[in-house]
Amino acid sequence: MEILKKPILTEKASALTEKLNRFSFKVDHKANKLEIKQAIEKMYGVNIQAINTIVVYGKLKSRNTKAGVVTGRTPKYKKAIVTLNDGETIDFYSNI
Image 1: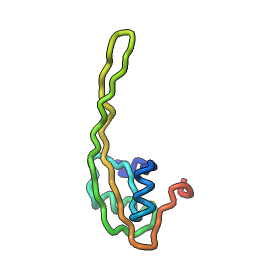
Image 2: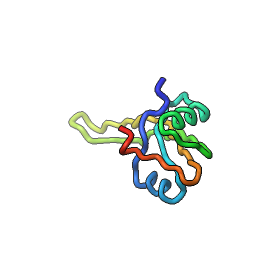
Image 3: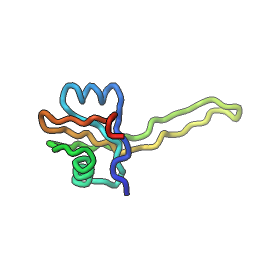
Image 4: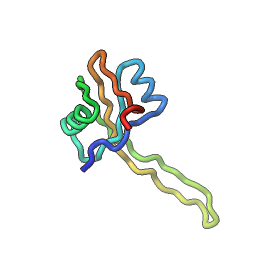
């Protein structure tokens, strides 16, 4: 089971990073906070102060097609917001 799926790099997540030193990740739906903490510390070599997890439910989407209106949902996912200790940071772009 791969715990960390990918970092979330949106405007809202970037604002959290700049103001509060918090980083957002998409994580496995079954992972708990301790597993997420160990995975991030191992991968990026940082010390974590706190972790908050959120289950983000999919948005309802609809579109018009030849067959009529098709409705569905985007998939739900689990998001982890990680607060790092002061002076530490994660550079997503150099760790490829």
